[in-house]
Structure formats: structure tokens, C-alpha cells
Length: 402
Image (spheres, rainbow, N blue to C red):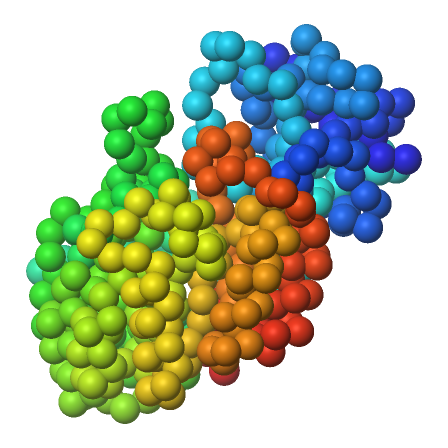
């Protein structure tokens, strides 16, 4: 039996296996047992205020819907279904996943898609992280890259920022305060009419090639197979600063030849990407939410470029022999739309990228559906992921160092 997991108005969680909950996969329906797994370690339960739990018997006035936030390495298959009250507040930018109860245990609609020790939850003793940050920053106290990633390490628990100080895995190199997209779910810059605050503060200054190179060289000298990455959640679009990035890459390679230099980008400026490749860029991770122009534009709201430019950048990177990943912002009912799956697999069979990294799109599901539309026919997230794999691309969630 699949039972209802819900919250009362004080946030206390209850299980009721006599009621069958509904989920949202583009259409509101009952979840299938094959879509559910026991909530993995690191799952966070979250109340959805002003949103009443939905069951096959209808909505219940005194019970708020419960959602789950998944740990890294899992891809969600369904979002919560709920009835929204007129005065319901805006939902913060999290990846809301359907949750329920099975045999008196919390289950979630998800599948495991990757595993990496570098992306496991980290626990620090009191004051430990601050001591690590202070020791590293004392080596290069005027470096504004270190100042930004220290902020992200403390305030946001960003793994790629913390890796700079822990000297492991993929390390962050934030570079650009500006962007040429206005993503509806941007985590570092929300417009006033959105009615919610950005969960992170965007970097406010342009870091220099010398600052970036010093952080990268320090990292790669200590992590033989490490990755250094331009383009982080705390910044805008790095290709707007491609000249600085190219200079930084040249400085890095003058000092050391190991490891991988990566760029996370929206792929909007093909000529700027080519400049970085010419300088020695080895890997690129291009973010998008859809392979359909209308859906892409509705979410990204691009300024001066289109989805065709993004796909041209992917083609360029593949043709130049880079390690290419697509950072696919997934959402049940959009990613698994039959039309989306057809467009996605058509491109992936033509252009052989190394990996699709499925990333849960952090946004209020109702807001996203209102932005991009609901599906004509959703084939299911598991089927969509299987279609990616059958097209020849790898499926995962992380960039692995080896």
C-alpha cells in the first residue's frame, strides 16, 4: 500500500496508510510502486505551506502537502500534487520531490543515477570549516576568487567551493557577475516580481586572470587528477568574460599540465567558447532545460541568443575533442514529454556528447508548468532517462575526476 505522508500547520509530519496520495507527473495521478524508493540518507522533508495534500478522495483542509529534497546522485521522477490556497506564499527555489509512506517508512519518487564521494554530505566539527578557510586564505589574502568561494563554502555549503579549501575533486573558479539570460529559476538573481529572494548572492566583481590562475594552480598541484571549473551558481555567464578566462587558462598551463580545466556555461556564445578552447580548455558542461526552442526560451529568457546557438556550441566542443557534458535541468512532465524525448534523442544521436548530467530544476512546480506548459503525453522520467542512455550518452550527476 502507498499511503499519504503530510504535515500539519505546525510542520509536524504524519503518515496515513489508509489514504492514497496523488502525485504530479505532468498530469495528476496515482504514483506507481516502481517509481518509489526508500528515502535515501540525506533526504530532507519539507512542508509546502498553503498547499493542501491531494489524495484520491480529494484535498484535506487541515493537512499540508509534504515534499522531499533529494541528496546528490538521485534524479526525481514525480513532483508533489497539491491544491493551492489563495494566499499561499511563493515556494523557495528547491527541487520538490513527491514523498509518501510505504510500510510505515518514508519513500520518494526517485532513482539513483550516480555516486561520488566528492559529492556526499559533509559534516564539520564546530569551527573546523572556518579554520580550513582561514588557513588557505592566509596564503593569498588579496585573492577575490578565494573570498567569493569562502563565502559560498560558509553560507551555501557549495561543494565545488569547499573543494578549493579541502583540496579535492572539482574546484570552483567564479569569474562573471553579468549574465545574458534571465532564467526564471535563477538561484543568484531573482526579479522583484518573482516574490521571493534569491537563495544565493551573485558575485559583484570581475575576478582577474591572475587571481583565477593562482587558485587553479594551487589546486592542481595538490590534486593530481583534479578539475578546476569556471562558471558557478554564484555568478552569471562566464563566456561574457572569455578573454579573461583564456588568459587564465594560459597561465594555468604555463605552471602545470595535469588535471582538467572545465567550463560550465549556457553555451550562448560559440565564438567566445572557441577562444577558450584555443587557449587550452579541455571540458565543457553546457546547461539547458529543453531541446525544444519554445520551452528553452520560456525558461531561460535569453538575451541576444537562441537555443540554436547553444546547440552550435555543443557541436563545436564535440568536434574539437573536448570532454562534453550537458547539464540537463530536469522536471517531471517536461523532460519526459513525448515531444521533448524525441527532440532530445534526435540531437544526441547526431552529436555524441559524453554525458547527460541530470540536475533537478529547483523551482515551484506550479510556476514552472505555468511558464513552459504541461505535456501532451508524459512517458515517465525513467523512460526518458533510458532513452538518453539508448542514444549513446552516459547518464550521471557529477563530473568525475577519473
